[in-house]
Image 1 (cartoon, rainbow, N blue to C red):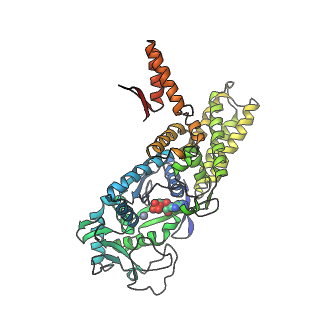
Image 2 (spheres, protein in one colour):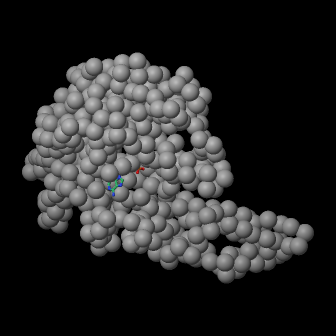
Image 3 (cartoon, rainbow, N blue to C red):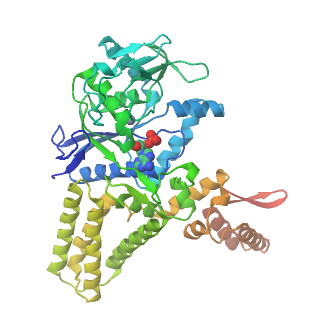
Length: 494
Ligand code: AMP
Ligand code: ZN
């Protein structure tokens, strides 16, 4: 395969050639687990998922590592606010991230947690200090001395001019135009989570986490490092500085950044009311497959404007593909083959591949499958499809779906799981009638359940156990537990 990808480091589209011919080692910055992930986060994660799937489809043995940032300024602040430990605080959001990724059919990377690598981080910092790249301040914090690393700015293409030697910044996220010595390690403060290490008691800065985890899992030099565009500076610039000054080798060779997702043309923000998690959209009745389709529609280097109209048309695209496959599978064809059809299947597979090789042009790959759909539908209408054409046509669809992941997963169980979650979180008021309808639970209002329970009781009293058992099974399958108590029959939602 001849994959060409834009490399933020060189500022050019380059041929992607891994260090080891057949193996790819890649790392993506994962979620900071202080809240539920939003659709913007998942735009980036899905962009990397597509790359991962595409590389695997073309025979690469891919080691794909993603970190979970389970300690940072925001997590410390929120866990202190809620009076729980960092671990208790993050557990819920780690689980939610795994569930949301599965909802969107994202293939699981090798996940590593920052809090499980604290010792290695402290050792890394100690080595940096020894080499003169890090220094300790009076309070026991450590900073990286950027003046010592002349290549600082090479990823973000910033010219920091006469760097401000000694000016420091100790928050994880800071202004985009300041070159300052950044915190590697923050000395313990009362009431904050901290760890005992060779460099004292404290906690790591955000940037060091990724340098340490990526190199631990992938070695000092690896093929590709990914994230959203906001991470170019300072996060990735700082990762390069820390890692390359320690090893003297190139850190990641290729830098892959997804452009931001906007909502109705605006930056997503809670205050504008245009901030959505995956769960918010499912509660409104949107299918996971529509969300995934929408998030893959625009090539990763273009900004993606998320709109509800777009989501509707994404749903219709997925529906068309599913119907098309169903029509192919369920129609009767006469024996033989039509060469035009098998050739079309072959050309479609080749076109999908060459589109994705072209810096992951997902829009073009999707256009290719829809061209095939239109041509085959007309051929079926005209009775021109034969039995032997079925296999290559279905294979072209599968080949497409191995990357796009919208045909095979069933939306309904995922939607039901989110419905159950909303009930346990007390978000019943957010459950839309559309969700109830799609999840097949529309008939199960409280009234309907009371009615079925009375029917079950009546059946039992008239000794029709077959019927009463059947009603109980129906309710159980729909997540309703029916219990016989001394006050009579009671039910509750699971
Ligand atoms: P965070 O949980 O904030 O550390 O972000 C996780 C990933 O989502 C990072 O790669 C971010 O760059 C990315 N990200 C955050 N917001 C957006 C957005 N609006 N569009 C695309 N990617 C985003
Ligand atoms: Zn990172």
